[in-house]
View 1 (cartoon, one colour):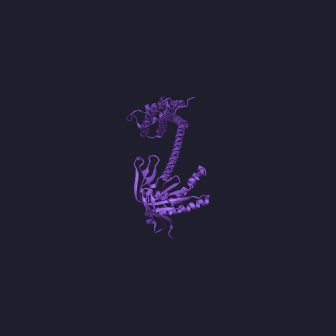
View 2: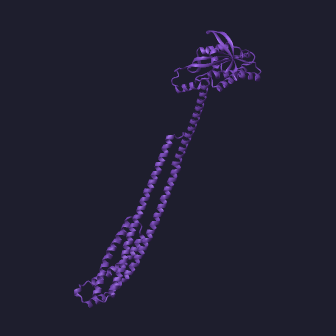
View 3: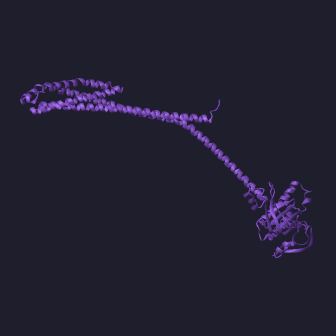
Length: 464
C-alpha cells in the first residue's frame, strides 16, 4: 500500500482544519439564531404580561369605581364616578386589543401556546359580562345632566345597582383569571430561560467536542509533523556540528603538519594568501648561523640491524635534536639521510644567533653521549658551523619545503664534511662572534672545494 506523500498529508490537515473552523462557525451562527429566537419570544411574553397586568389594574380600578359610585351620596360625586367608569372601560377595550394582538404574534411565530390560549379563553365570559354590564350601565346613565335633577339621578344610579354588582363580581373573576394568565406566562418565561440555558450548554458542549476533535485530528498530526521536522533539524544540526568539528580538527592537524615543515611566520603568510599559491616566498637575511650535523657510523649500523630498528634509532636521535632546536629558539630546516640542518637568526632575526647555534652544538655532543650509554651504541656526531648571508624561501606547489641558499650554507656543509667525528668545526666568521664566550682550538688552514684555503677552529666549550 503506497504511503501518502507529504504534500497530500498537508492538504488533508488543511482541509480538516477548514472543516473544523466551518463547523465551529456554523454552530456559532445556529446558537445565535436560537438565542435570538428565544429572546424574541421572551420579549413578546413580556409584552403579554404587561398587557395582562394593565388589564388587571384596570379591573381593580373598575371595581373601586363601582364601589365608590354605590357609596356616593351626591349627584356630583356619582357623575364623576360614571365618567371614571367610562374612561376605564375605554382603556379596557384598548388593553384587550393589545393583548389579543400580542398573543396572535406568538401564534404566528409557531409557538405552542395551548395552555395560554386556554387561560385566555377562560377570561372571555368574565370579560363579556363586564363589558355588557358596563355598556348597559353607561347607557342608562348617559342622560344629560341638565335634564336630570340631583335626587332623581341618585335614584337612577340605585335603580341600576344590578349592573354595578355584575361589574364588581365579573371584575373579581376577571382579575383572578388574569392572575392565572400572568402566572402561566411567568412559568412559560422561566421554561424558556431554562431552555435557553440548555441550548447554551449544548452548543458549548458541541463546540468543545469540535475543538477536541480538531486537536486530535488536526493539531496533533500537525504538532507531530513539527516535532519530526525539529528532530530532523536537530539531527542535521548535530551532523553539521560534527562535520564542523571534524573539519576544525583536520584543519588543526593540517596546520600542525604545516608547522612541522615550515616556520610559523612562513606558514602564516601562506594561510593569509591561499589563492595565490604560485606567489613565491623568498627573503634575504644578512647574517645567520647555519649548523650541519652528521651521525658518524650510521651507515655501518644499517648493515647490522633491521630497517625498522634503524628508523627507530634515527627518529629518536633526530627527536632529541628537534627538542634542542626548540629549546634554543632555532629553526630546523631539514634532514637528509642521517644529516641534520638547523639555522639561527631566521625567519625572525636575532642578534645572538651564533651563540644559540653554539649552545645547541655542545648540547648535541652531551645528548649523543647519553644516548650511547643507554643503547650501547658508539655513535659520534660530526658538526660544521658557518655565519653569513643567506636567501630563505618556500619552493614547491603541493609539497612545500622551506630551504636556504647561498655560500654560507655551502661552507657550513663543507665544515661538517671536512670535520672529524665528535668535533665541532667552524669558520673564522663564526669564531669572531663567539671567541669572547667560548674556548676554541685553531685547526689551521684547510683547503675547501670551491673556496680555496680557509682558517677554521674547533669549538671546545663555553668559558666559565
